[in-house]
Length: 458
Image 1 (cartoon, rainbow, N blue to C red):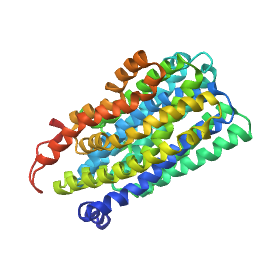
Image 2: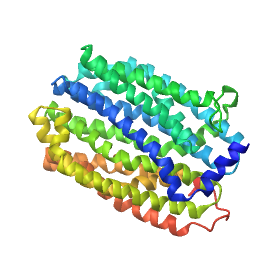
Image 3: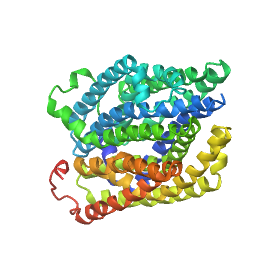
Image 4: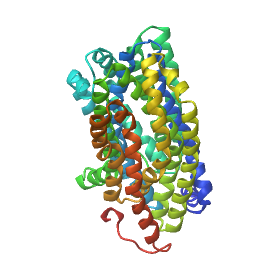
């Protein structure tokens, strides 16, 4: 009980800026390592000097987004409820939702794994694979699907740890798996000559080991909530609550997967080099954004915990601190990305056409980074407090509701340059829509300690 009290005081009394940074640094490091090991697949496969093989990584990236969509739905859904429950000192409720989210997600991962393996070829074509990319995509995907239950459920474990304010424990599991993936990519892809197959095996093995490390934190009772079958709820209302709270994450990742599929199909009309180039640019831009995203993930438990504890002034201050840090970091990343755009693309592919297309796209992408923090952090804010409808609306904008129409229209009007500029245009439109929601919420927060209606009804 003394440990629980200490954790409660840490989350509700530590100066907000210090707390956001303290929780954000481990998640930022985790995001960076995760992004780097995603880039590692591109890097080592790129060493094969085959644009079709590099394009396969981009196709499978859409599948990874689908798997993560389910993992984030259960992870963010359970995590947000757990943090608010602990803010109210309701440990029993936190344990119930931790167990329910974990087992529901693992079962979903098994279903996705079996379904994907049965319909592998049509799935790859649906995700935008061309005839020349298809053999490489199938090689890589088989191993990703075998590890799907562990990949999806790792998202649940990671987010429960984060929302409890134990970001350093989450970092251990994610970073260990990430570092292992980089080593195994080198070993299997280049040293053992397994090519794309080696990259798939490396990802599957590292994801499974990362899952085991994260789960060990719960087995060793380093958390307030517990994961045991006996605590898993069979009430459909509890499962629905998890899914409803986590739906914004599901929507964001799911639409991201569809957007990737559309992007790959449109780029595929031009060449495999175009698919490979846009894949590389997406990975590089996400790597830059990982700095701000990590800080944002440090903000979420602060927001949820203090909202549950009725300390609304800390929620507002935490958002503003997070926004300032995010804008500062992404402005720096935009400058670096612009100056070294050609060099960054060249790291992953030596093909001149890939470098030409990728360099142009990256120069557009990086300047849109400065518009992303408002929309992304707004989504994180509303999801963390349980305002599911607003969070779902905002989460869908950048990932698909705006991006997909912009992609289609831009490509028809401007050709390849339309594909290269679609994401930045989508980011700017999303920023304009999200800003009024943030301003209204911050202005209408009640004084600390006041009762407030259930945020899920917002």
